[in-house]
Image (cartoon, rainbow, N blue to C red; front, side, top):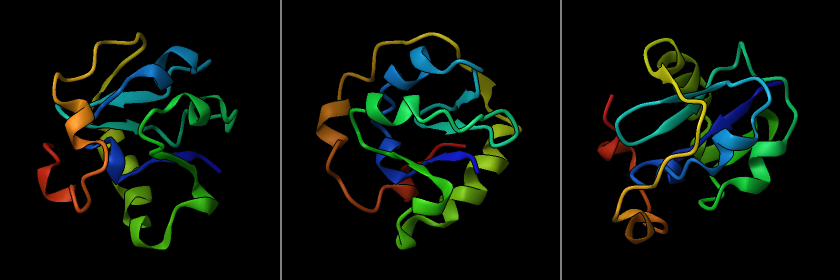
Length: 107
């Protein structure tokens, strides 16, 4: 069972989770991170580090976010690996509690 990055990461893209990942399974897009399910070892370390509370165990993904399981797997094939924490976008805090952000995802 892999962990999954869900909608709340879109346009927030805090990278605190990247620093604690022992297997470098995060991939970075323009305004979203994903977890490569083939690399994730289910260690749970990233969950507590995510300020956006956007990371869930695959079995715990909220029902309205289940499509993010497939989306993480798909985008992990095209997004570049990220292995070090970066500064979040300047407006990340403004986007933290915005709902329905999928339309803002840049592939």
